[in-house]
Length: 494
Image (cartoon, rainbow, N blue to C red):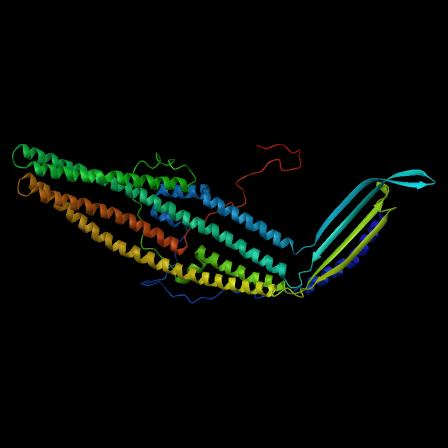
């Protein structure tokens, strides 16, 4: 095809130098993004030594193998995580789309037609039938002289970063929710067991009172009071059972299972997880790197900055290069040889002359949106600092409270045992026994709730510091694998 090749070579002679010149002459408009520098406190309040936070697999320091397994299962099966992974795939595809605008586009075309022409001479019509074949090649390229497309790629890149941080944020929340609900479930189991033990002890007191009433040393009213207190303690068990069931159902759903899937697995009670304390919290500036919500806000601020450049570039001229080569022949084998060959090449210039201020308004909109994202970033940092301070204070104060509650529970337990002994000897009243048993049960229950609160506060501190899943996550595999997507005969679908 020497003719076709000569035409192609001629087009290359024009196209390639112009391509190189455009690459050298490109520029961008609008502000370049610079990561903001925010004033951060030097240390957390009450911090004595700034040891780096130990965020890697922090839930393992609760020392519960069942919890470790549930966290891994939740990461693999949680539906919010699946959605976040799909968002990453979407952001990656959007980024590739944006990159595609920087490159030339080319299309090939071919056609084959059968034609008939009729001529009339002296009343006689003669017809001629012939075939015509045509092949062509079209190319175009927007030079992006002022960087609109490059700013679009930049914005898409920041958007991809934000989507990846969103997955980290989802994992942080997920791990925290799994740990919190697991601790709550074990706490309810412990409280249910305590209520049943206390009710059994109170039943023994009621039985003793009934025996004493038969002997004439107690009244029917005292029997009723003793039985009423035992029944009141037993009445709290169904509420605790319901709360326990809700925690287990939540755990099942968090792992991507039906609500009742973990009922049998968690039926046997185990101790309330107890964390290893104290917790190293690092320095406040660490949260700029560890908190995914802060990093999302920073990436969104960066993305909004790039979009100002996009809007600004629309106010400048745009230049596109277009070119095409085509060949036409009456025989298929003559294409590029005994055929007509045509080509065209040239730039197209577009200059915005009058638009009623719309383009400048678009720039102002983008700048206002950047301000909003910058304020949102600063707010995210302040919220993160507040979360850490609140969680650490809550944890330290709860530890003090638990110590006092444990001392109180021991004293009330001793008092209840002594009152029962004295009551059997007839040296104290039933009211003193009932009051001591009620106080002992309440104190023991408060200790259990405090243990749950300590574990929950430990979880909150690690979440506030930005601790989450740091293992590998496969974000490339889609939830739905399509099959038979190639060309085929259409079929009716239900």
